[in-house]
Image (tube, rainbow over all chains, first blue to last red; front, top):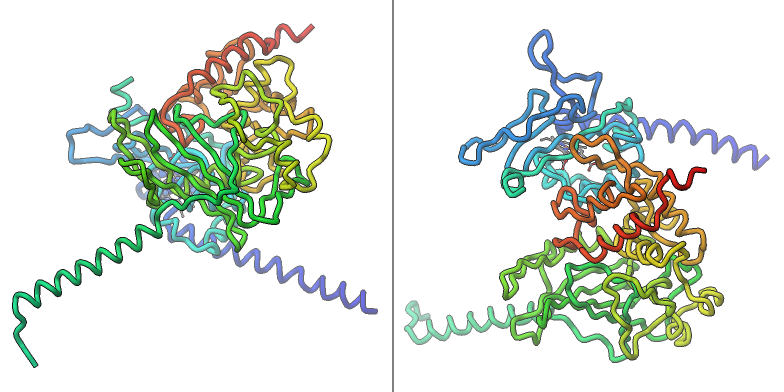
Length: 181
Length: 340
């Protein structure tokens, strides 16, 4: 009798869990939307009414097919940062950075990341919290203030979106480093 | 009540204020000064030292009275609350910094760096964000941030990296790059066990101390170097949740004789996620060709976007690069040779 009641209670819990997961993902989607992740991580394309985000490649980062020439910024110019028409390649004093694939593709996106890897990345500004420093314009100095709960929701949402296979290129060195080569 | 205040009183007041400020600053300084370790602290010298751009290092550990390390997981020792470690870095004759690790009462770990003054008689706490010290020859020496400390120390199986069964093994590797001979009085695995400060550690590993099982001496040294310099991030996920999710695993489990073979497998078969611009070949190492492969390339690079390890070093380790090259070139059979 008791065990039956226990099972019933356990079963009753299941939908609650599912709902709260769903709620977390919805909140993550909301945060990703208003924090502007798509602005840089979803490529822009020419649409019927002008440039628009290519949601078939949502949050998949700089398209690997789009090979950019090394540098667009002249050191003596007051214009410092230049971006590609896709808004996914950024040239500045740090060199050229390409926005990352945030979809759950295991080989080219965040598919193998754990929540801890994601939190460590955003909090420390290093790839996986342990590797190289993440380059501008990724707004690490602002995003590191996300609460744990927010980062958990963002990560839950990112892991729930369609995986896109897109191998983003490595960043290119800044003009000074290039000149020294 | 006197509305006016004479120049004398004003001067006294200013002096008093100055004194208060000086006292406050003094108090803050005292708080931030590096404290001496208890007299019971022991020195140790790991057999595979971490490359720190050629700095000379001295290391100490202090274990609390009446407590021991739990060695029941031989590759992931658990240190008692109150454990303190120190590592002093010198460049030439100058002591530059001392890094400290402390296991606090709440169970967390504290990582700090202290910078030595010009007089070399005191060291003060470095800012949490790290700092740059300019050495006499103009070299800019980077003191790590506390995040940097965590980046390495919280990735591996244990937050203490240089004090473990393999590093303290008396069966020392004569080919280990930059190996320092143990100093008199150094704590090694046997001395530690004899002191009663290592509990539940397998007795076989005291009798036959850990040693990397590799087909050649250069292979043993190469794998030892990669273990000590890379294995805390390229760690076995079964020991850590902070490890990087890459296939390449370089940490050796001293209790598992097949561990080195496993590491070699990941080196030969996993693909590098990192691809140099325009390169299609993502192999980490190419047996027989030390010029190819992303592992040697990233060891040679000190471009911060490319280099490995990603932090703690600004100069390539030429000795280790030569060892790894020799190993890849001479000891690792080429795929052609292994196939019948």
